Image (cartoon, rainbow, N blue to C red; front, side, top):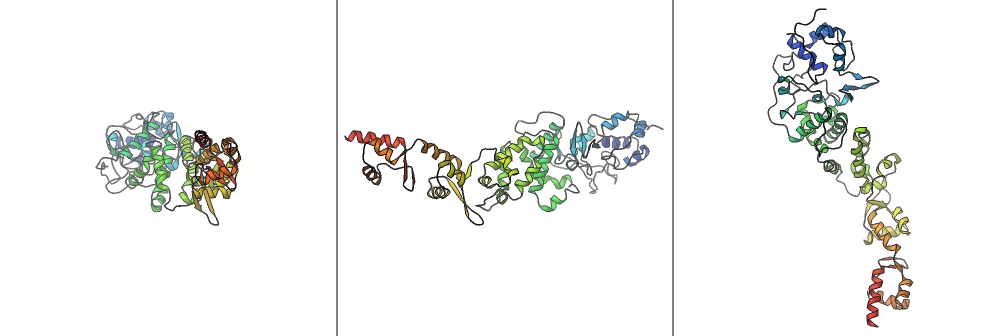
Length: 425
């Protein structure tokens, strides 16, 4: 088999599709389809495993080198593509509309992370990535050259400087793809796939349903900018960026009695998205956030509550508070209404629900453990119960807890009254 006139080994980080496109232009071919035809490779070679033996002979490059640069499905998992040393979900890589940095290509460089979902800028040149020509044709793998469209026009760089959030997101993808430590304020995410998965979920959740539907066809880089710009802060200012994003997702209606009513479909949707080893610390932070929500105490789904209840709760139900204090649930409700316990009242479908501050319950329980009852106070002061009742009516001393005929007094208040009575005597 005749070798190509112009031959060159793959550049650093150059994947097989970029390599074929570059060699096609160097050999003055009409487009990369001509080289694929000579090599006997199918048009879907980007994501389909195929024989590169003839291509190896044409380019005089060892077969194993070409296979290592391929982006084929990983062995044993056809839904994930090879991305360097780690696989990547097909839905998170946009090989149907490959993106490039014009300046990087002119310098003879390409980067595999360009095609990761949400990567829309080049942090090295502060420029937008391009995935279409001025004629609006997408820059497919079968164009005339790395910088030339099918229409023979040269691909042009978009004017303007990308927003800082887009540049920081692209830098994060670059750091994760090449094993570099990300910035200190970046979210604790392990791997490019985990970062792209989280960003994709947030971008789709924020945007309108019509734009979410275009995920099937994968939106262009220009049409994705607004959605990615809104969702990108979740990857920065950790953990405040995540908390602010979750705060904005809370529905406007007040007095809801469940997370599903307070946050819509967000709560359940995030559970499947965060089921990724690289997002375990993000998952823990999300569980902590929802666990601190008052509505978390109404969870009935055991699978959901198991993930959330491990975090410290801020609110408890009246049943738990009643058991803790040794009183009835109705008594707890009355204490919330009177302000003796901090809490909120929520309207359910059939009855009212009360959310009680866990700290307020624990504080009251601690005081009750060392408190003195009515008869104990009278005995410690050396007075009759009738005299103590009169002091209570005159507001000389007051119990901090009253339930029916039961009254509890703070030890400090009793000691102060004892000192006052001693001076009078």
